[in-house]
Image 1 (tube, rainbow, N blue to C red):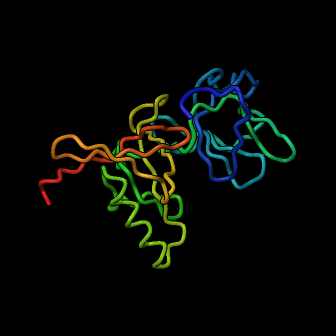
Image 2: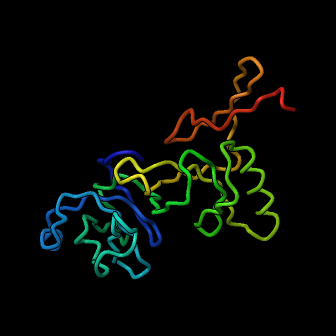
Length: 191
């Protein structure tokens, strides 16, 4: 997701999203009306925590989601004003790489420009007691400063499409929201 959606975008506890705040009394009082802000959806039903753009820490107290441009439909929360999902404040994660995530957190020591390398590590970890190991592609946020990143989960069974040019093998994967995602380059002469 890269830009505002006209469809309902549902959220669940633990999600962190970039949302355009509306003109609620609360947003106006805080001077945040009509601004893009990161919001973490809390386990406490119906509440979210605004996050500071500068530090990634909580900004004020948790707020009812209804004050933050969210609505409820059959017990599920959604918004039409979400610009990005899976947003993370991190000066350590390098955009443009594939990472192994365990428990929703990146393993900074397990990353690569090549999807296949990270996929193989995640598969091995799943067989070694980490069933929630997954691969995500991390890139810079398009709506927040460069120390915010967003990630896209890449299924481990994604088909890798190959193209060859000279002695190089280029890999691509097609995701529903990212067709033709560059998944690495390999110099075949290096062995």
